[in-house]
Image (cartoon, rainbow, N blue to C red):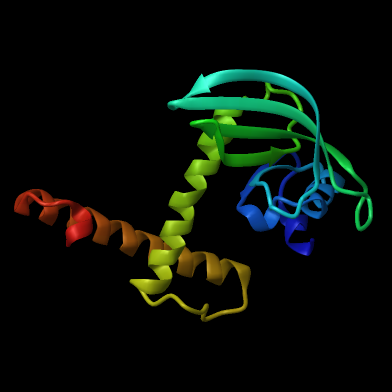
Length: 175
């Protein structure tokens, strides 16, 4: 909850399934923030109205207005449930508190969520490849500078990896 206090109003935050719960969306709402997160399997969802259904990336994308939560731990909320199905089976379910599809379309929500993986991969690489397992200062600016410097080194390494792979005529992941 406290981590959200620094986010500017109307910011769209993206999270994985750990954030796809009513408590997170309630915390966002209190701070005038918006979110897109993969639905957590424990999040109770009652479908109210189908906003639209359309073909998308070889499957079907359904955009629902739903009520999420039982009201036991946090008040139930009206959210959107965006479901991408392929072969009749649900492949990805996202929740968002952006209720107007004109503000955030189902396709945009899917694209934003998929971009989250690139950020997670960057931080995974920073930890694993560059051994950035801890921060060397407790000050926010110093931590920011350390992450920024590590990201620059990471980018340089990825560019070099791409050039070597191109010269060797192999995929960068093989290097």
